[in-house]
Image (tube, rainbow, N blue to C red; front, side, top):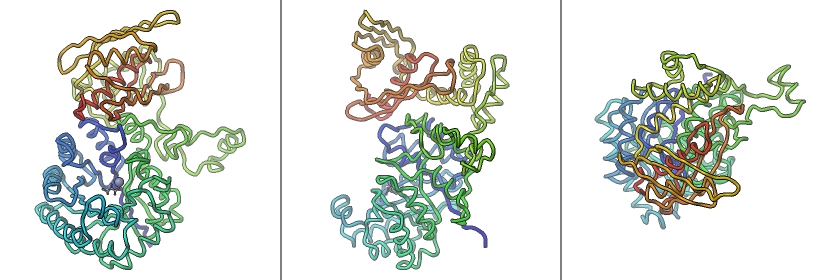
Length: 510
Ligand code: KIV
Ligand code: ZN
């Protein structure tokens, strides 16, 4: 018997972006979408087109440029949402309208303020509208989600899902929106829905689990065992609140325990580590060291007994190998004598296509790194390219900074920030060294940001490593992340802060 194929629906760019502070610009989203295509996910949920003009443009650009995966846009079960969503995704080879409405009692009563009869009627009308729009394109399809499905009354939910199938949805998603489900219960719930709604046998049943109780992966896998053939997940598990089921965990569990699941996905697992790093860099969300699959320690064996075992036979303590997830090839790639061609070729191999102008800038940065560091690794190149990608759309760029500090003086800083084409100067005297640089940037840009988080780390081993700084900055009560690398941690700090300011500006807060 051949194994069941499980579709991987990646929502890093939609639910993932809803994680506080994780806003990305269009260039960043496009880069992640290209990498998700290399990872070979089946569906990329590129965004929520009605949410903002920027979101619309990003979804449209991804739909136009990224080939391979199906490109989905999210829409409430509201006519205007669905039409705008269709306008954004229709240029894709295989577009999807993903429409949703709440079905639990508490959501119907307090969130959308509709009766069950109204929810049924909206489902009928809006899935039909989506089907009609999708019907104009040979490759298009419709997904329907029942929000808060896991807390919905099974009989009513089955009725709604039946209507959605009848009206043309070919994927039916059962979200655990608030992360309330338990694995055994959720598996039973999916089986019960198959029983109550026989039409589900003819469509793809999907699940979308949140991680509020740390059970998103377990619940997704329980649903797969119960018959679901699509899992919605996000890279590094990012998403609303505690996040979504983590793509790398779901995929590697299905692969590693194929003996138990008898299922497979189409994901090229060797692209997992790179995708994870890219998402972490561009969202500013650091990965915890002990995170399964992609954390720094995921393949580190500390105790002597474990190390000896792995050296004599890897399977003694490793159920997967670093190579399986693409962690084995981060070594030296280029050196100080490498030229422009070598850099272009290596970047192409890593999946980056830069315009001539961007390559020119990247080469200048590469030379700077190679002069200071004998061996330039994949991690260094990724850091360098991420900077290039993001600066393409920046409104604010750090042009210079001077910082004076010491144990006997009050730290002072002066900065020059190019702001929408104009050079602005800022200065400050503050208690802390880093604080004074941030205050000078505030002065230049004319905001009053408050620092909610600040982290520094070396991106690779060795004293000559680039320093990476991540910040979370609150502007007008909203949180924005920023990340940057430099040999100078103070410069990385200033750039990371300016990056957060750019993200705030893109969200209309500056
Ligand atoms: O968590 C949820 O229910 C969602 C839906 C929009 C699918 O994100
Ligand atoms: Zn969600």
